[in-house]
Length: 382
Ligand SMILES: *Cc1c(COP(=O)(O)O)cnc(C)c1O
Image 1: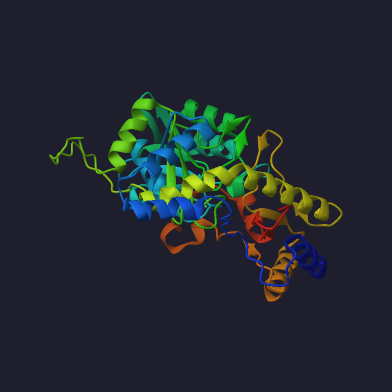
Image 2: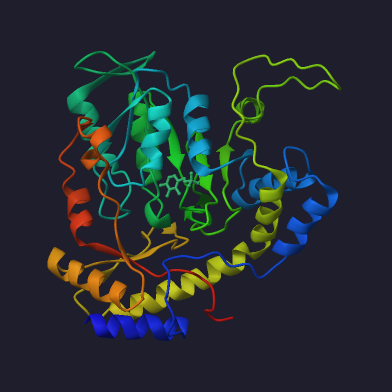
């Protein structure tokens, strides 16, 4: 099986060279716009590309306010801060996620609670969430609290794994039943839609990432998405040192972050936004080819959920057992075709090993059997 997979991927990318998991593609105005920032000297905190990039993202995601930040972790940190997460609170998220989700809530002084993911989306399971809360929490008009110590459970953070949208209607219903704020980690899901709505725009706040391995890149960068105009305006204010506009006075009216995305990076982002529809088209074609290839095998391709349109950020297959997963990982990597297991579950990391959690049964099954495949849009159908 391994040899067939390797051949298939080499044919897709038409190369005998090393094939990475996900690389950036610069085929548009990237050089032109970045050069413009250098020629104008506006490479830093002032310049037109930041505003352009934010307005483009608002239009693309159909949300009220998009606020560019230095990276996705900073966007998520900001989103949790604006959601009102406080020191000593709990935040419920997935054990099956990239560590940035947990780092962001840790920096708010909060502790994670890990709840299982669903087999449908690989993202936070609404049934598992409701079950956990029924067993361990109580709520009233001032919020939701853990039964064991009365500490607030102030946010739920689903992460749209590999770009596949979580079951958001159900998550929204559970969060409103328990009086908890929903914040979406949409770092992997730019271009993914839940029942026609862009991911990251359904919760109170959402966070995107433009790291080098994501669907589009600004080098490093992120974006907070906000549905409420007033909250969005304050989010922009807080990420830019909370400076009150004035021709020369320095006055800051609340504690702020310096999370502003430099104009240099935003220039790259504007050029990448022009390419995004083409990237998404190519990534869906690639996913379709993988799906067809794996259809007659004992490996099962991870499809977008019925209710969603996924960006297929990273393609994945579930192997029949951990032994065949390990074998495929080894042979592909030895032949210069990059594949990866999923992240170690968060409760296995030393800093989160004592976190409250449910059985994490589905998360552990995915951890043992899933493998990610090369997913760059580049070279395909060009
Ligand atoms: C990429 C990513 C982030 C943010 O990463 P940055 O590198 O800080 O931009 C956050 N959460 C998840 C799940 C991610 O995959």
